[in-house]
Length: 373
Image 1 (cartoon, rainbow, N blue to C red):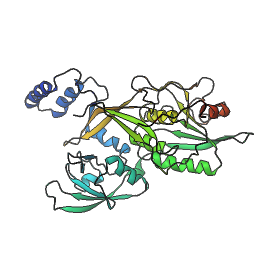
Image 2 (cartoon, one colour; image 1 turned 180 degrees about the vertical axis):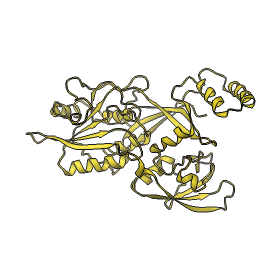
Image 3 (cartoon, helix red, strand yellow; image 1 turned 90 degrees about the horizontal axis):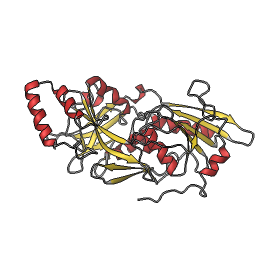
Image 4 (cartoon, one colour; image 1 turned 120 degrees about the vertical axis):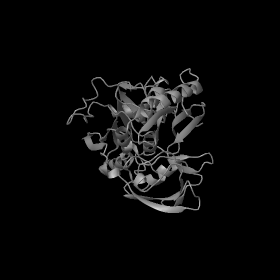
């Protein structure tokens, strides 16, 4: 197990495994025994998912066919977990250990699962995906598998509008992001591009009550505001610090366009990754209430019986290496008497924001971009 806490909550994990293996032989209820075993870790985010719950998380599947990709010991991309029940990957017969030689004709050698997701994201509205699969049982058995994606069935998490035009020429583009699901980046790109065409020169991104979702989506969204700098650092169980950078050539919002992020106590996980990313890179001022403080990353593993296992595997910190877990992100400007209630019709009222002050706070005189590590 690649847990973020390698002490296993102060337990002898080999001993724990022996105890529960014995219980499994006498009890027979595999799901119940594994659930109790995971609970001994003392981590509220590590848990078992039943078949229905595991199927429901497919909305965070950025590939869209219900398959989990990961590297094997030889750093080859493989199917790392049983496909989600009823998914295109399951119907196509993909199995754990199958090698994914190519995706849409591009060889996967030397790529990570994140690289593959980035490649797929270049054509986010594609209805199908083709994987060249080498069978786990026979390396000479190589076939192309064409699968239908299900992203179109996921709710669009983006709502946007021009919220106001001021006499000084300030035109505010308001964007509400409700969650970081598989559609968030593509739809946010469209929203920002449309607002820019409508003349927006200042932006408000509303992350209130956004509990998060896909970590990778938050990193990718950073690329729409700046490029080729660290969006967040991931610290794994061996304390290795891994930088995740915003990509090149995807920026939509001009660097000189002020950005405000609205957060509250319901803003968590991927919302905090994005907030920390834009804040520390001097692209956004945070306004509102302190965020929730969930800085842990969970991996989801599919099990043979169709259920799933969620384990905490790492944590993320901001580009300035500020901790998020249990602390949250403190706003630069408290939201009292400035932010409207999050209600239809009035939730997008940006009229009380002093954008001259926002622009000043983001200037090089007051904000320093961290050195890259």
